[in-house]
Image (cartoon, rainbow, N blue to C red):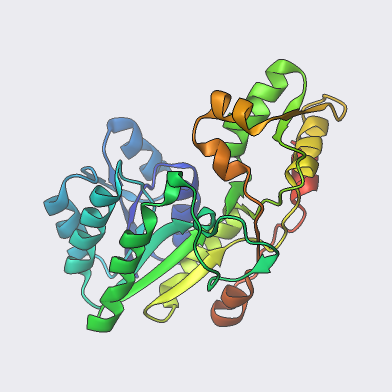
Length: 285
């Protein structure tokens, strides 16, 4: 299958390209700079010059593909929807996979699935109208699929590394927010990449929680990271106000208590996460 990918030079994008190529797909990927072009080429894709604001370019790239995986995040919800619309218009009945996130559910109050009500922090509140518009295309012959990814780890760990591992290692103790009892819906980057590949064959209008099914507490994650960083389990609590001062609005997302199940993807897509011991991963890093 010919697949066009946005965000292919990123942390998740490069993993997705590798997995697509491993499954025999031909991949083109959006590249807005020379370094991005080098990254997607190294991952196994053919670079397509352009950006998310180049709607004509997105339309043309999607028209040459049989499926699109939209991983890049635009600066605003309006810009993200404009990019999605341009690609869906060109793709017709081909599979269009849109990236969302589990933070839109807010505190889940126990284990939930994709049908849980939304209660997003302000940081991701813009996602609702975008996803509604994307999924509505299923009623008019389109083939949209949404993956709401959990908190990704593995490789560089990205958000976890930036906001917890690096500053914690520098300070001598890994931080966590509040009492650390909030659960994080984690997924390994390679498992998430496999889910995107499996979702190419999902039914129109499908929504999947991109989670590994293991939801450890923030306290336990911090302790595991501390071990992995050679800090002998040293951790420290931050009040939410202190976390906001250090991290910005994303602190409210990290403070959410979330437990989600991947049961729908396991059943419908025959997808199976391979990385089911995240705390061991952090403790070894």
